[in-house]
Length: 350
Image 1 (tube, rainbow, N blue to C red):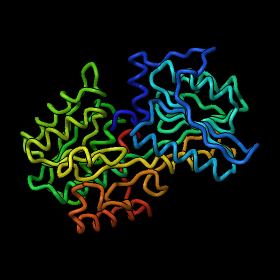
Image 2: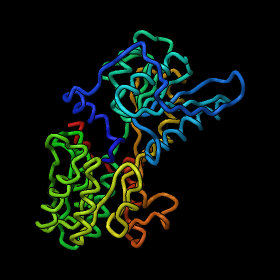
Image 3: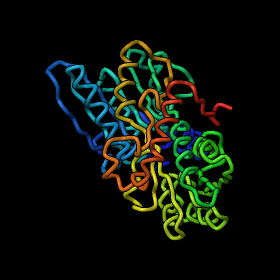
């Protein structure tokens, strides 16, 4: 997983770390805001990000999604870019005070903040993306991803490309939610290479989401044992996984966005989250009276895909672009998952 597009599972870790404290009466003067106008008097759609958008492709897609929704409804959009916990709190309060049609919040960081606001603002509609509140609220919609479906396809690629017959994964933590990035990878490899073996290492430690050195160490351990295809689900530590793979002639798979440019010739493909699709559809869900529901988006809904299955592959710098027959097989498996013919087990549902 990339640094700031973690799944709802990360919220549990953040809670343990005592990450989110709510503050009221703050203003958002310190936060960077962007507004796009629509027709005068049209509805306002507001997005609050957990970090500055910058070059974060995951968050850039979120911005595109809220702008598309605003355009579809002849309205306008405003983006509040946070930089830390304090500005997240300020931005949520500012968004609520502006009374938009829907407030979109991306990431586990906002689950507790929304839980604080939703009961007091029953007429305000919220959409939480890539996470959800523990309690259900009639004015809160949630949009989450079925990452395991895309991870299975990446594993299928690994099974077709491995020379050693050994694949592996480096996960942030040993939890069912993070095993969504290791167990389906192993299952996908088994589907295309029945004799393949799989191993998993976990970053753990005091800073599991940002420990590139530890992630590199775990990846190196797997590679030393013969693993030549690695699923990288180590958040910011993914770059350590890529370094280890490059140094030893192994291959890796990225997550959330296209990470191939980080290590051309080493990163095979990426399990991508199409946040723009999910935000736009989630807004329709929220204004369509489907509050209080959590909807998941996978291959069928267009919320999850692989870089190799998207347009622009030739310019992606992904290794998979050199393996057209592998992609043909992966497309067949994708279609089977979409049709329901092939079921991918979700470790988080066990």
